[in-house]
Image (cartoon, rainbow, N blue to C red):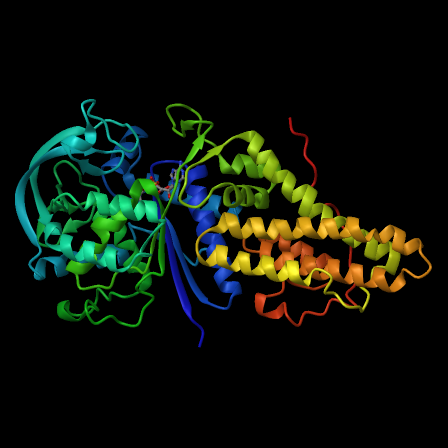
Amino acid sequence: MVSSFYLTTPIYYASGEPHLGHAYTTILADVIARYRRRAGQNVLFLTGTDEHGQKIQEAAAEQGMSPLELCDLMAGRFEEAWEDLGISHDRFIRTTEAEHRAVVTALLERLHDNGHIYEAEYAGWYSVGQERYFTEKEIGPDRVDPIAGGPVERIRETNWFFRMSDFQERLIRHIEENPDWIVPATRRNEVLGFLAQPLADLSISRPRSRIHWGIPLPWDSGQVCYVWVDALTNYVTASGAIDPAAPREKRGFGDLRPSRWPADVHLMGKDILTTHAVYWPTLLMGADLPLPRRILAHGWWVVGDTKMSKSLGNVVDPLDLRERFGTGAVRWYLMREMATGQDASYTPDRFLTRYDELSNILGNLAHRTLSMVKRYRGGVVPDASADGLAAETEKALTAYRDGLERYRLHEGFAAAMNLARAANGFVEAKEPWALARHPKGGNELDRTLATLVRTLAVLAAMFEPVTPIKAGKLAIRLGLGSVPLFTELDGLQVGGCSVTIGSPLFPRVDPD
Ligand code: MSP
């Protein structure tokens, strides 16, 4: 049976341009999606844009547009960026879509029917930047949002509330009983630390007089749904679990219609872990829906040692890097450089170092191997034993699979690059140029060339999730037609393949 895999990125605010941080999460998801598809799973990969709320309403007003005009423009911008960066999402969701609005309405009704909603007066410190309230303790004496340091405003108004506090015990138990539910462990501990304090109820609405850009509450048209409740629900909308057109008691809550829910993994940055690991699961519990299987919170990209921010003018544009180095190089850098879960610092030097790996190790291995097959064997791979690097290949594949399945992608790709490094070492040890001159070197030269071509075929499979276009090109040059699947590697025959040399896969660049 084909197993399925459903993964999501956050949906990005339609108020700002896509930057390196957004690109990181989306590429991370893409690499996992591609790896899973190649391993034979039926993947649903979801991304999209978060289009309601105060932040969008204000950004649109500033630019003299209607909120929807701004969202149309920005959703297009994100879709183009993802196309340029080779993202293979199956669905791009926009929270202004009719289907999503209907699912949010159904979810709100369900929470209301289940008795988890009440009305009350609320006073608190709100950050428009993060679209959420923070406690007095969180904002500290300077009264700034603790995530981005932006302003907070004092708001006092009547809201509808979700009894989040009722689910605190159940949530703690879930986290304790499922040690891998939130990864990495440091992030899990952070959430448990947060839950050591009494959990407040969640305000789930805003008066329409203040914020008109949202989904009206089904029982109070004077209030719109809080944007995080609206946004988080996108994961259920896209799964198809809820049929909003069905009668109120038969929409799929508790008794799901066949769908992709629950998600196998929600990917996000650590900035939005609380909303995903506290708000979202308690809302799902309140609506009788199963929880996602895993939550992965990665670290932040900083520039040098400073936060990336529009006001500092140090935002790194992934599309700019792509122009100069190509899509594969940007993807490789982001995946190889950041240890999943920890912060990483973008510097042009590190970018070039990572690019050099592609060019000097993988690119060089491909170029010299193809050239030697051409020069010594007329471009046809000899039909000889290709197991000169069998042990190294086996070891690399095990580490690679482990890295990609346990969300330690940097380790998986390090293993792939190490295999290319070992293959270059093999060339130096075997000295094919000397074998070619030696009267009895023919058989050994055949074995050496066959081993190198086979290793490159394995490398094409390993690099396909991260550098899909270049891996495809490599497979064609090896005469394989397409990148082999992992299941095809064991019996793969390279003898008889006709190779072509072509231009360098990762051309050297002038560092200036
Ligand atoms: N709209 C909300 C998410 C709703 S999901 C139901 C949101 N949007 S956002 O546009 O601000 O995107 C936040 C996400 O972008 C982070 O969680 C992270 O995945 C990514 N990044 C944004 N800046 C980042 C860095 N500097 N470094 C790494 N990733 C960061 O929050």
